[in-house]
Each structure stands twice: as structure tokens, then as C-alpha cells.
Length: 116
Length: 114
Image: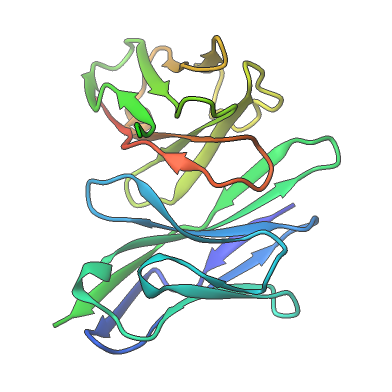
């Protein structure tokens, strides 16, 4: 079985300060991991993905995430928050079973608020 | 180029009626996915297609839900005898092929069952 836990439902940071959105996962198979962002009234947009290559993954808009197998974590970070980063962020784990079936599990989301 | 499109963008229906939601994936993408996002809850994976085939339908919430895909392109998600708890945003995504590839999401269909 696989699962994703986003440890914070809501994070508030001041503009210009670092952002940390936490994600822990569990998976029976080698997972692919993703972070998506959803701005109000818009569709999901891929921020970055990990697919068994480099463990430090750089994404769009200055975001990056580090895959830590020993900690089963895939936390999302950004050195300096911008007002436009205010949105909902989803951590996603994808696995393929031995039979080739794809299983995707989404976290419950973290709402990021930026304080001017 | 064109992204994933969904129609209608909004749908209001009465309890007990059937609804059809449509997804047009990116041209050439063989994998197609349906998700549901309910108010106050996270994203729920419903079903995926590889070509016209859906290997695993266990994510569909009940037997009132069905999905099909024809010609390896357009997909339709049908909800029969809608209930108020079906109210949600239904998202569609496509990827070049399943298995580690990036999914591109459509804008969603917002369904409200009165």
C-alpha cells in the first residue's frame, strides 16, 4: 500500500523568507514523486518531479525538493517566498505494480499564504 | 500547443440526473487520468486509461460512475443518478505514456448537484 502525508494543511511565511512544505510517503515499490501547485480557480501545474535520477530536484519558479529515502520524505523548499507563490500545493506519489497497473496517491494539500 | 481541455467548465444538475463530463487530452498522449477534488478534501484518483483500456477501475467511487475512451483520444466520465456528494471538481490529465511521465492537467469541470 502507498500513502502520502502532507504534514501541514496551512503554512504562512513572510515575503522574502524561506518556504518549507513537508511531505512524507510510504510505498511498497520504487516511487516517482511529484509536487503540483494549484492557484485559485486554475488547474494543477507541475512544479517538479523525482523519477529515480538525482535526489535533489529543481523545478519551476525557484522551487526544489530533495528525495530522502532513509526518511521517506520529499519536502518542497524555496529560498525566498514571493507573493505569487500563494496557492495550494500537492505532493503526489506514483508507483507501478508488477502487473503494470499505475497507482497514484495525492496528499491532502498544503495551503501556502504569503504575508506582505 | 493546445493543452488538456475539459467540458463543460461548470455543470449544475438535479439530484438523480445523469451527467457526462468530457476530456480532450493532448494530441498524441496515450495515457489519460480522471481525478476528483471535493471541497475541503484532497485529490482523489478515479481511473486511468492506457489507450482505450482501463486496467484498474477500483478507484471509481461507486457503480454509478463509469468512464470510457474511444480512438485513444477523447474520454467521457459518466455519473448516473447523481447525488449531492458527487459535487466536486473533476480533473482530467494526460501524459505521453503511463509510468513515470509527467501528467498535464486540464482546468476541470465543476459539478454541483442540487
